[in-house]
Image (cartoon, rainbow, N blue to C red; front, side):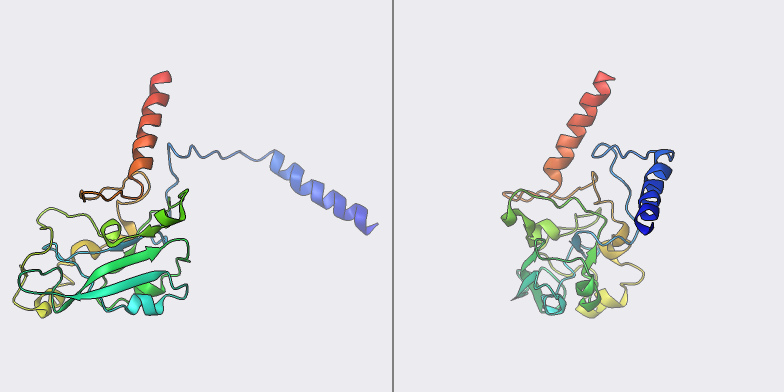
Length: 215
């Protein structure tokens, strides 16, 4: 008797869904909008003058439970300055084949250099392509920013950068709602570097144009 009752209950679930409205997502032409604080791909933020916020402290790598982050710190000089202060990240990599998007690296970052965007289109057909380099993770240069290396423009010491960070935060403000999400990925050009999402965006635009032409 119990088996028969269970069978009817199971069919009841099936029949109840037959009369519900079908929701179809027109992906990839109309990607679904993720939640504002969705944990997507990372962004290495910049100060308002373009210098990098990352100081190469490696705290994010230490905090990562999946060992997905690799950082090598380097020394700034007056001739070659990439960030305020003494140190910067000469090498920065995130392996998205390992990353579990827990956000612990974000909490460990002392300068709010590392934040997470809404970008979730990270599928690749090659494991090597899932290792994102510093050039791929750096936030784009906004208006008024200058590509490092260059001298400090906001003050004479790194303290001047962090004292005014609340009123002039650079690219870290609202990074969780970054326009660098699916289909909106925009970055500055780096010779020899293929940015994630760029090829998919071009293919999607071409497909959408062709679909509109047929209609």
